Image (cartoon, rainbow, N blue to C red; front, side, top):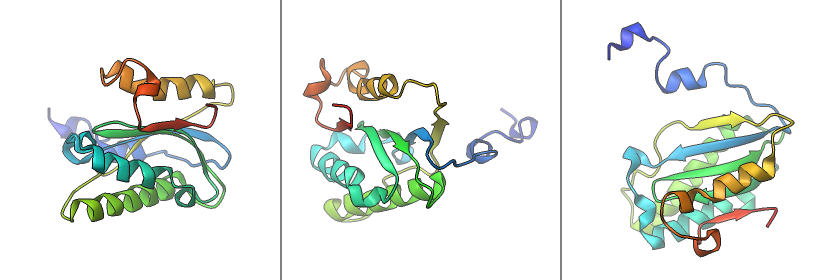
Length: 157
C-alpha cells in the first residue's frame, strides 16, 4: 500500500488527538515486540505479571483489571491527575521490561513501541469490560475457565 495516500496511517495517527483525562477509565493494550509470544515462558510471565500488577508502579492511578497474554497485555486503568496516559504507559512498559530483562539475563526486546487505548464513556459498563478482558485467555484457547489462567486480576473479583 502506498503510504503517501494515507498520511495519517500508523502509530503516529493513533497518537494524534489523544487526550488524557484524570478520573477517566481507559482500556489499554500493548503488544510484545514483533508480537513474539514472550510470555508463553511461564517464568517470564510470572515476572511480568508481578511487575505489571505492583501497586507502586501505578502511583495514584488505579489498575482496575488486567490480563497478560503470551504476546500482549490488556488493562483497564483509571487515570489520576498527576500524569498523562502516555506517561503512565511508558513507565509501566519500562519498569516491566526491565524486570523481564533482569530475569531473562538481558538482551530481550519486550514491548513494541506505542499502545492502543479506548477512553471509556461514563455510561460504559466497566464490569462488563473487565469480564471481556479476563475472558481473553478463553477466547484464545489457553484455558476453559478464567480461574484456570494465572495471569489476570480484577478489582471486582
